[in-house]
Image (cartoon, rainbow, N blue to C red; front, side, top):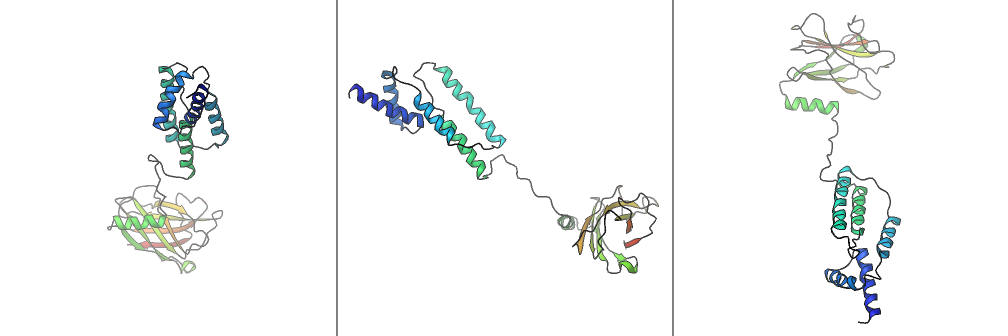
Length: 252
């Protein structure tokens, strides 16, 4: 092979090396030729390949786990450079850039990463009620009755568990309220505690809620309550109800 043919073959292999598509045999051939062609060799192919990669790449966000893995590869390339500082040891960074591009595609197609935690959706009040009944069969259930003719269409029940201090109200046909004018408030009567009922929380009935499931938010711990009373109060509720408007009650 003439000198010109040898150099042409070297350039062909060097271009393939920069693009990262040499076979094992071609890499061995390139290593042999690079020693003889070192005086003419340049890093033009490396710069061209990097420029092409940059021009055809788009910025994309990466998950933190992939960023960490990418950063961890940088010292490896630095060590290779430091171990052999001779001009003949030129390492293409194209494979590394290709791996980064693959990481972008991974994120783009929303493929889950191994360390990505998928947060479970928050259960609705109705789902929490069903779960309470399922896991705690000893849960107390009392039916609501209307307290006056104004609320005669009201029905529903209260579900309460002492051990878990958790409960819900399932209310049917409770009139919609305007939170800027008034709000419903639950009161829990616990004879074991004291004479004053415990505040069970303020709540609203939004438009379109024929059946509403309301979580009970008792401010104090209660044990074996005997009566649950719903009143209509001023916005934000009150500390002590005058019970001027009693809506419904459930008692054992």
